[in-house]
Length: 318
Length: 244
Image 1 (cartoon, one colour):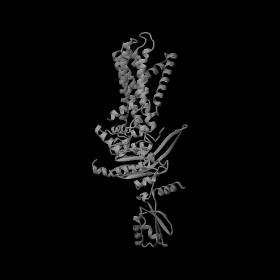
Image 2 (cartoon, chains in turn purple, blue; image 1 turned 60 degrees about the horizontal axis):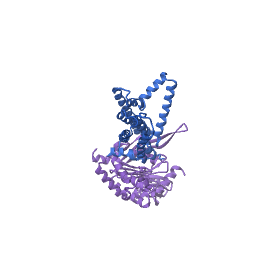
Image 3 (cartoon, chains in turn cyan, orange; image 1 turned 135 degrees about the horizontal axis):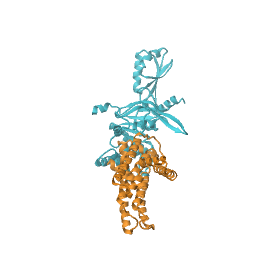
Image 4 (cartoon, chains in turn yellow, purple; image 1 turned 180 degrees about the horizontal axis):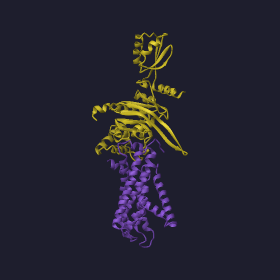
């Protein structure tokens, strides 16, 4: 595969992925559908926030992409290679929710160990270890046993391990767990640097405010399914444009507003989903050109937290 | 570097590994202090029991199970390494530890026997080889079991299974020695379980050269078979988010 082909191959490609967990309890077989026909394509150099309530299937989804578990149905490719293949593993870095290392090893030994698993030479291992200890500001603790590390320190070390050998895809499961505010800021800086270098990051986090500083692209999972935000509209920038018309105008507006996602409609007006304030003049001018008589326009923007709550309430019925 | 790190990890992963080696050496030395009639002890048999049968249980204790239980395995199996390599290098780590252990133990026992004149060191080098071969078979069995049994339960399971099998064998050979079922059971155990009996015969010198070579080949094949089963299990295993 040459370089130009690489550009076009999606970094993550999931098609109709379903995961059902089977278990035996008291002699009875039970099954839980953790993911239900999830499809997703993610290109190069993007940060995607994976959000959803507890039990939505976020960790399952990350585990499937990382090749830790097998899908019950569907297929997953990482940089064009089947998940769990050696090539897919070579392309990705992964941080589990609670990273664990051999407690007797120092941070430097952990990095050297994982760098060796990447098949790097002795010189490359030394160079990568030095680079990552510096990048994650772990030099001071490099020769201390990991067993004495706080959760935040282990998270930083896990990030260093995940960044070994410049992965093209980073899968992060709650990476800011246990990090202090400075650690969170540093994590953001590192992740943005990684993105700048062309890597793709899929990050699962409950810290929505933090996510919002990293990305405007989200995947909302609820009960194992991806919930649509509204076509191509990124959830973080999502706006609800309330347009009211004189009687009769909604019919005229129907064709004009077709490209936008209609959220609510009534006799008096429509509410449509827009990407943000930049879309408002275009929507209004096209309505006017079509002959709609507008009486009021109001844009209501939502941050990701509001969007999350709204989507959750819509799905949960509460 | 990959092989080196994985091999060394089997030695470094627990502080107790060094302690096991040291205490075993202490045991080899202490046994010379026990009053015993001359020639009562065959040091080869002693080494065979301690390093061939018991040492693998302690060194392979939780070799995969510890990582699976703690969740560390999730970091390992997302690295660009084949499950077969992961298994193989870990097994090699155990096997190399055993080789070094048996050489050092052999040197210690020979030195103490030379100094005290106690016991017998007949066919000691053959016993050393038999001990290492037996270690490998047990270690492969235990390592494969560790892929499916969580935490450090692989060694305990293996110990219980072995004790159970031994009890059944004792019962059958005591009460139904001539029964065809007993003979079939013993034959099945002889060729499918770690070849304690065959290698012991080789150590004692009760078998011909051809039979000794066959015993060596048999134990190597069993090691490969148990190892292959472990690799298949590792390839097919899911690593869900479960931490102790």
